[in-house]
Length: 161
Length: 264
Image 1 (cartoon, rainbow over the protein chains, first blue to last red):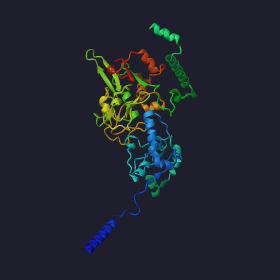
Image 2 (cartoon, each protein chain N blue to C red):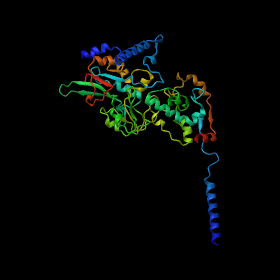
Image 3 (spheres, each protein chain N blue to C red):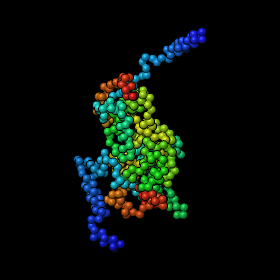
């Protein structure tokens, strides 16, 4: 009798849990995927795209120490150059809106960055403000034909690992 | 003294003399390079200031400044304005929190209580060779670069403000509030970090060879600020330092300052 009671309790609890679980199940679509905007300037990043997705923070770290402590300010690998290429055409920034280059992935991966507490998120001469800026005028055709690509979840998961 | 002189005469290849000759040769070479015109009116600036982009700042150079207080005009604030424009900090007058406002450079008006003589001078980080701010920093964020510029590495600064207390010149300030992306692209600065005059390190590394304050002072026609390499005997600042009687503020502290004052 006692055994039967225990068995009954277990079955009831399992059923209750399963029912509760079905309510809280995440929707099939999951979290909104990051939007990766194509860089406005240039065709190819300073390093391989796959490498940069996984190791941009290492690259930036090495460069920042050289720049601040030794004064070696080569444009390759500098955050300023990242921003020059990747600032969004809409906001002119890499971190102003939630679809901007840095924020898009970082909010998806929920990795907080404090780069922009100190660093400007905009290129020296903002593209959004000055469409006819001499420095960016010849990229206008690219701005017009800009494509945004969605990254598939599997790839993001690989990056996160 | 005569003995010393004869010794030098007898040994012309003494290491000291050799290094002096080499220095003279190097500066002569730089002078020649400075005159290299790429096209009419276009000069090779990078060569003129002798440091390639991928080369580290070198201790062969010591950046410094000569302030001629006799030329510094009363009521003129051009150096302060130029500094705030170049480096993106809000001047005291425009700040919502004037007591917390950064002062990378500030104008002082001093008066001798006995003679009523007034002296005008700008005060900023003195870029000591032996900086007390570097001595006290618990994280190593406050440091002196090889070329004598005293800086704060904001990546390691924890905002403890020991350096602010250690500085005899009140040259440093803390950023108390979020700057909300108002920084200049060339000059990162932000909440929770201590900051001060950088001798326009971004301009120096670019090869401009001058600071915003000195440029503004020259543009205003006062010529009270002169920036240059104190290690190069041929530089304008070295020549002027040789001629003019100059003082270091609080020379008693023996900090060997990078900023020297004339007329105080």
